[in-house]
Length: 404
Image (cartoon, rainbow, N blue to C red; front, side, top):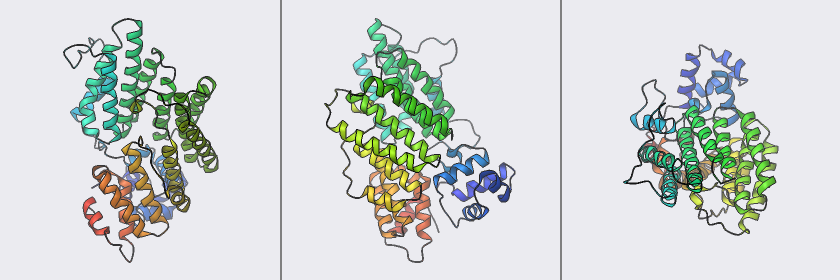
């Protein structure tokens, strides 16, 4: 079972040699909130509070909160799977170009299919299988980008950019944001050598996400807005351009919300939603949907629900989620986030039955993902503290390994 937030907070506070009062002064979070968290009277906290505590402790947010399913920060050597991913992203100096995984160099079309399949594993939270496959995918892309004619190499560089972008996303999920930024910087370099003008801004969105995870919110905001402005100037009427621009606008909105400017974030999200409506009426592209930015009416609404929950507006979150019909291209990972956020919102408004129903749906959709997620554990712990426990809660607690 995941370490309780209160235990983690207490342990990190002691490691930083701070008292509860000292951490309160340094973070701006009240001593009462810190005390309740450490005494497990509160199982969760709002995202701005967690950001402030992480800053006061001098750690990244993921160190305090955790991420599903991740590699625990135990001080031990990294597992061989992660070492292989690291080596693929950052090859050893002066090493020869790796051999392709097949009998001969992959065609660009087959390579893109291989990368798209790898992205599918990512969105389905199959991180273990992805770690096994990704080093070979990156090696194939690196070789394809280095040989052939100019057009072949440019197409290979575009594939390499998508493979390294995936390496960045996987590294973030593993709690390795420095490795993620190394992978994403290499991805942008590859994008610059490709013939795809939208690839670099698409990867910039991923970089902004990595900055958010490091609590570099100003950097995340500035990068997303800079990239969005460039796309708007050059590709405002393109279907693919609107998709990338909308994703960047959502990213900027998230950063504004985490900086405490929820009104600005909500305004940008509403603009994104209008762009998604416009996108639905534009001609479809031939691009493999697994290789483009996740941007649609569904994804914008899911992100609006998430921000409303995180910033203490559960009624608004439930109103936004009510009657949602997800588009077929919505990745499983986004669907699971929506169910978790709805469960949190029901808990916050005192609707324990609604929370349990959402968690039961989440268990059916993504049982492995749910078992590893700290917020799912925190919600169930909060529900167990109620004087009257709703039907089905005990089964969920047993599934998550919660004994109380």
